[in-house]
Amino acid sequence: MQHIGIRLLIAAFGLLIQTFVKAQDYTFSQSGLLGMAFNPSQAGRHPGDAKATLAHRSQWLAADLPYQSTFLSFEWNKPVRFKGWENVGLGALVLDDNLGQGILRNTWIQGGASASRFLDAGRRHELRVGVGICLSTRKLNNNSFLFENQFNTDLNDFDTGLNSGEIFDGQRQVYFQLHTGLTYQFAISHRAVLELQAATMGLNKRSDRLSQLPESQSAYQKIRTVFSASLRYALLPGFSLEPYMFHNRQGRASEWVVGSWFSFSNKSNSKQRIYVAPGAFVRTNDAFIGGVRFQYQAIQATVTYDATYSKVNNANTRYLSGTGGLGSMELSLVYLLNYRFRGYSRYPVPCQTI
Image (cartoon, rainbow, N blue to C red):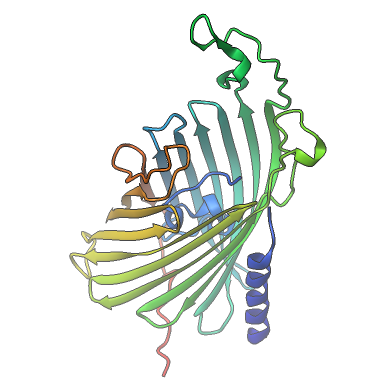
């Protein structure tokens, strides 16, 4: 049964990755720290009883159309004993994605639930599945657009008071989305833990038409597939490597992020332990990402910066270094809350293998 379960797990990962899907929604460089935003199986998957997360991303502030994304979530978990399932988690999030000072604004309000179980008697293989239901709102501000026939030759400038003749349909849309995801964790040894994640977001595709176009030219909300892999490896007491890979695809938009955190702690056995983790990543064909993560007891703060190196066609086809506000700054704050007495550890140390 153990081998059958692992084979089914591998097949599920393969199916999710091979799914062919056809503009991409929100993105965060700290995707590995904002798990529920990209995978509902991450709801309630944290070492404490509850977790609150706040994150904000500002992108290309020096451009005419900057992006602003804000994420807020609260998660809770509880140990259970029900037919092999040992932990359940619940979570809720609000995510606001704003383009160009309100030209296009997307808002997600999502609730999710997850459950986990071990696949073997040695408790080294853990599987967690989750589902999320999201209320999505998309709003288009057509007054922010200017067209050629709104150019006033007397003023030698565009006049928003002139009628463009354009007809916008579906300026505000509200609909539900369904997300599914799974997480597989393998405790390789007492020093190394491997984690794989996969998710599909927006399974119930809905029409996303924002203007009156022929059916063949209409835009539709595309299914989004997400996959990530991470490894925590303790090289020395107080020092560990955390390589990370993240991929998501939605329509023709595709994103690959690879890199690693390098975690240091001042004391190996103390409640006063402080973690400091610098990180270096790259988003292929787009940006270099540098960051640092701090953790002290129940509080974790992370800051990252994307230095854009991609060729931006609407900026005189020159390369942007990201130093003039054309990069992306991202901040996140996590607070873990423990209020229940624990008589056992959620993460048992696996037995050594030879």
